Image 1 (cartoon, one colour):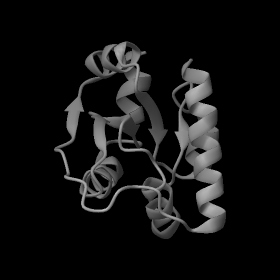
Image 2 (cartoon, rainbow, N blue to C red; image 1 turned 120 degrees about the horizontal axis):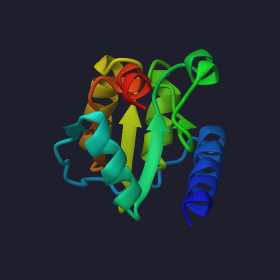
Image 3 (cartoon, one colour; image 1 turned 30 degrees about the vertical axis):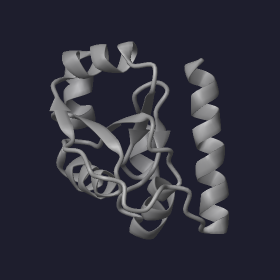
Length: 132
């Protein structure tokens, strides 16, 4: 079931990048992002039926290694990142990470401002690799 969600979200992001449209509701209330250590993050992600995993690093970093099942939405490419997150449905939970946690803080802020529920990985991919 998660594979179907990944494919659906990936297709939605690709379509939105091409059209520049916005499917997110305006005026949605922001929530505070949670920041979880590796084990809690992994358990929460596995148990969450609404979970979508997003890597906010660069394509080069993603190609060097990423968490299995993560899709790429590069926060450094701000215009496309904003288009991408505006296309995301607000009824899902987005588990995000970057290399060390700094860029994912920026991504979390942008996403929660648009009413998305975000769970951030404390220590980023570096912490994930060290513990997994």
